[in-house]
Length: 214
Image 1: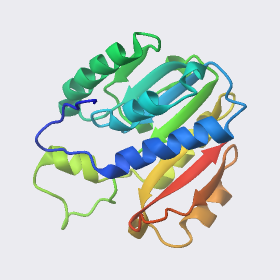
Image 2: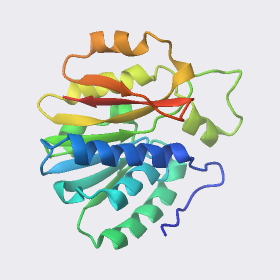
Image 3: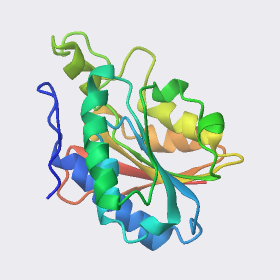
Image 4: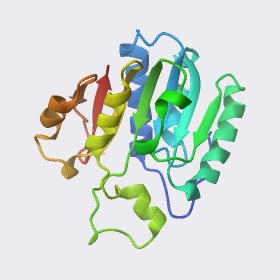
């Protein structure tokens, strides 16, 4: 059983494993065009749970040439690296794994990811910036709240921007009560290179998944 290293200020929830499970289903069943040379990109990776669970479970992982994990908070990096080291042993070095301590919104995909296909699994902060609700612990705040001028919409706009010439697909998990009913229809109008769709989340009442592909 995989034993995760986590900091005291952070404990991953079942939402992470839920996202990884849905990612496996989407990648293996619906993305036949992603047949080889794919980069798995775990954005806002925290200690790496989503991407790790995906790679441990995915029957189609032979199509993946690289696993990339991105985390902005430097206080998460050492824990994620410990987990990735364990994963490297599990995968017997068959998939190169890289960890970047960088901001998703500033990450230069074109220069750092050479493959033409990227499969995203993204579990971003749940909440919009809210001074009255934010926890005092700075690391906990970074894990749960978007920073100033960051948003769920800007995640999709960033992906849309890089989806030419790269081929992209993936899933973004989000907190339903943080967006209004017109969020998805309005977002569709702004996207040029990717299409998005929402799948019913079953028993998950507070979170939902937005799928996309170019």
